Image (cartoon, rainbow, N blue to C red; front, side):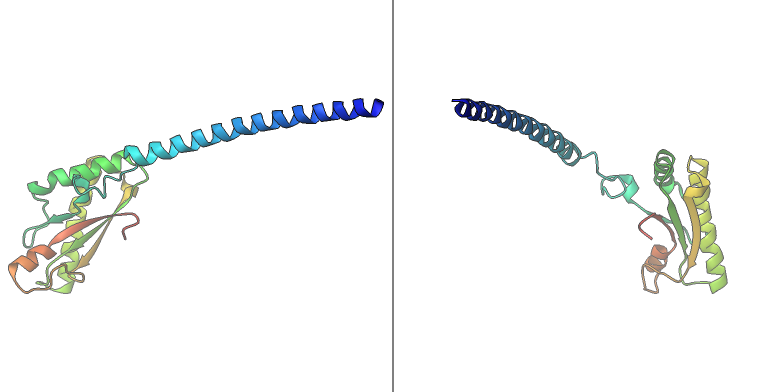
Length: 171
């Protein structure tokens, strides 16, 4: 009789113990899945992760400022573009840009390097005056070394007279 009672008590205790384990594991699994699914859905489906620098409808996706022949003055057509990039840099302290000044093929190599640097510096000056920090902006000249258009006509030369804005990770 004692043995039957001991077996019944052990059976009841083990049955109770197994019920508790199953309930606690169900609760743990449910809360874990709910939390992770809501986080994935929130980031991916709402579009908060969209980068304005890569959005073709955003002005920040435009990265070239074109200049007149033998000039390094930023034309009024490009002021809003440069100001938009300045605002982005001001609001994103970790963002950095490289400004590459380019020229057409006319002129000596030394002259074109100097003109390309003046073009990059003129864009840099506007960025800094409009809120970007000095450590966020680097200006270099490529001169005539990396033309975008290879023709020997005015439209090709106009395409090559520019400063390109490249964000960190793009250069």
